Image (cartoon, rainbow, N blue to C red):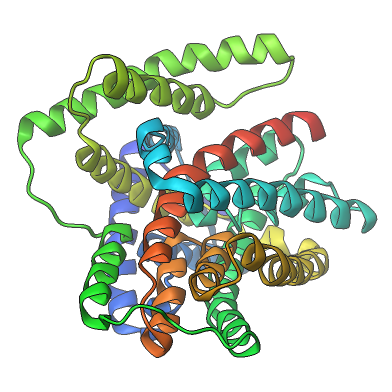
Length: 408
């Protein structure tokens, strides 16, 4: 019996993405383990569809594919909104802790990619898979993994998307499991104490910071601001496409369209802030970005060909095990010391592990566990979301694109 080929057009594909997003929300609401490890709903829903697809494929019944045109559009829109988060006044206002954490995050991007690529090379695999098990998945998280995975495939790593998303899922869980215990170990070893007396008031501020870092932030806005936000995204995407073309011609290797869009968004944002002195619709742009990320992630995960993971299982296990060791050693011996070797530094270490292995939501969950037991840390609750949800994704995507161009 010949296998049935089911091809969905781009409208079917976006409808599937929306349906898988709702399915993921339903599952994460009912299954507490997903909330505990901050697993995004689109990832859960998309993986459910991918599992059904792999069962149909393995049974020789059917294989479902779909047009990814709108998936690419949503991905580029999301990364454009990432570029808009890079506000120079906000970075300078964040102070020393934010700048130090950002530098430490950039160092970790380089280390994760170098370690992953090196292990894959030594095991006889394409080093590009090492980037998929490196900063794409870990610092980047599921959204970046699903977005940049196709670039790995274009560069020669055939199962790049599947490897990256699988590694990102592993990172979400391991980052949640590592953060709290590492901070507790530091607190007990160095006998650290919280120096803030008014626990309730500061904790309320910490809870507010947590809410800001979540994807489900609610706020009151108006239609004109959403229109402005949408239009500046469209402007940056259009100009950015040409910027990527120029960068490709300049450096001699392919720059994805989202890189030019991100760079353009940085310029537009800071011109609006520093030159034109006009209000930038940050919350509206963030909401549009989250909408695009949710749809894109659900669609990308639904299209995963999970059967491609089989041959790479052992190299992935070795690489991800080494990444855990790297993160613990760097966080314990470097991040803690650089950030001041005090209680706030221990809490920031837990947060650093969270976004360095998974996502900002993992970082906030890690810090909540620590501060609930040992006392508040307003410095950590301010600095970690600033770096993890605003600045690090921009530098990560740029460095990864450069690595892929060189290594391919």
